[in-house]
Length: 61
Image 1 (cartoon, rainbow, N blue to C red):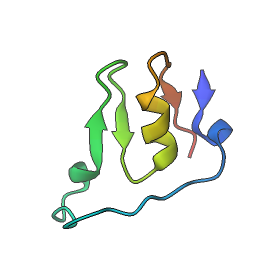
Image 2 (cartoon, rainbow, N blue to C red):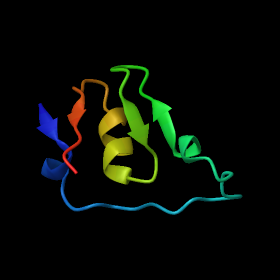
Image 3 (cartoon, one colour):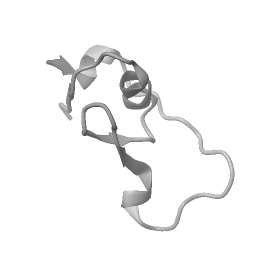
Image 4 (cartoon, rainbow, N blue to C red):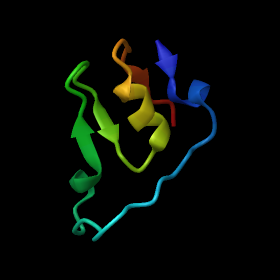
């Protein structure tokens, strides 16, 4: 299993448009391929889950 730290240092993205409400859930989506929750504020996670063939990430924070 690939660890999040194996993908390099955190890479925080910036949001375009209006920021979401004060709900933390607005920053997450479920990957349609593996079903893992993806934090859209971390581009490492977003890019990993855009790959056609990928496994779930081990979130090692």
